[in-house]
Length: 222
Ligand SMILES: C[S@@+](CC[C@H](N)C(=O)[O-])C[C@H]1O[C@@H](n2cnc3c(N)ncnc32)[C@H](O)[C@@H]1O
View 1 (cartoon, rainbow, N blue to C red):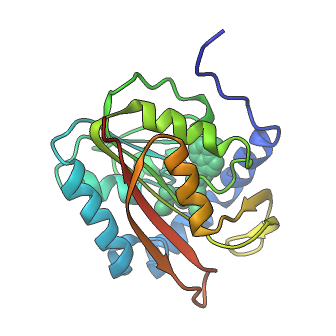
View 2 (cartoon, rainbow, N blue to C red; view 1 turned 90 degrees about the vertical axis):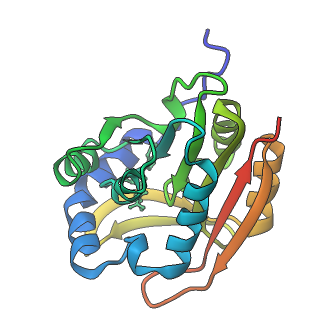
């Protein structure tokens, strides 16, 4: 048995099918409204820029749950050696179409074969909130192990108490997924337990499109 094997979430297929169904509307939203595009959100862009400044030149960067590759392509434009993976084949089709010069693969965060100390950076940018509460710590530990000393993780997620079961999303498309919301201090604690040292935390209040969020960046020291 693989020593670092992470148990497959029971709802993984349902979550994948749901993102496949919303992918076209999600891409349309990003392209036509700018929602979900860091270039249109100065604080998210500043976070990603700080991440890029920190990990640039350290080694490969992996955007886990990259969706249509908006952030992947932004980091590639900044000169990073970056690639993206996503659970949803339809999201990856869009990513490849929109950003043909970038590398994308279909994969779940729970099924990545990452060599120890192989990455300069890893992102879980609004893509880890569907992981069950007992699975997220395992994925964070996998990321921590995969980072080189000095490498960094950046993650953004929904803030709150408890879980929200979504039955429709992005323009009324039927979906079935659970959004596991985290309090910022809980998320920071999980990241520390995974072996990373948090270096910055950005809290973003709710707006007309979405609830409150948090961005955490953390590094591997040794
Ligand atoms: C809200 S979208 C964000 C996409 C992208 N990071 C962005 O900022 O545009 C969430 C993404 O997470 C992906 N996702 C959900 N669960 C995942 C998992 N277990 N492994 C990899 N990707 C996952 C979905 O397929 C979807 O593309």
